[in-house]
Image (cartoon, rainbow, N blue to C red; front, side):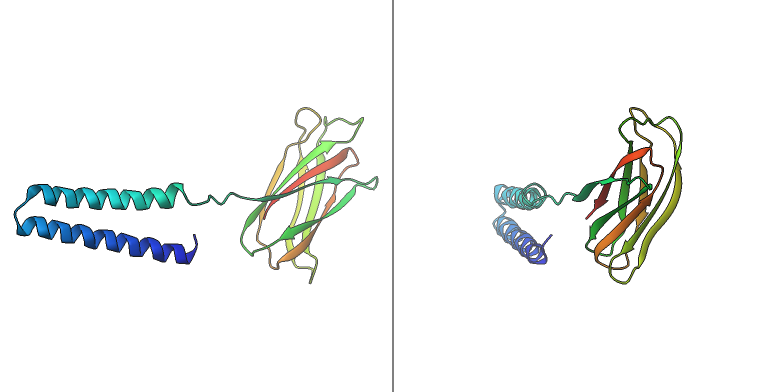
Length: 172
């Protein structure tokens, strides 16, 4: 949430509280039960309105993903650029699919490296054996990494030539 919005919500909540307290004090001064109940109702309604406005009318920030299909070359390598902004932990999702005419009946070994383009900071290095899945795919691989630099990163995958396309998804 925007810090300016937070200040506005706090100020409005304090104003609602003060107005409810003044109305309750007036009801107590004149010994009027209806005014005191109205002050309590105003306080509850005001705070509920603030909560509902904050909770339901603010835009929801959804997770955004960078998604690309990486083609595996005849030598078993594939390279793509992955944009990274922000130095917080994120998840890399790899979904390998069999090449045309191949099947996913035997396990394949997959090595991946994710490096920043500037400075070559290594974000992730992994070597895994993926078991066959169903329908010409292998199991998907999830890796968590924390980048050390912002900007474009280079993802390099080395695997069997039976893998034709690798779908890559990274949280922005």
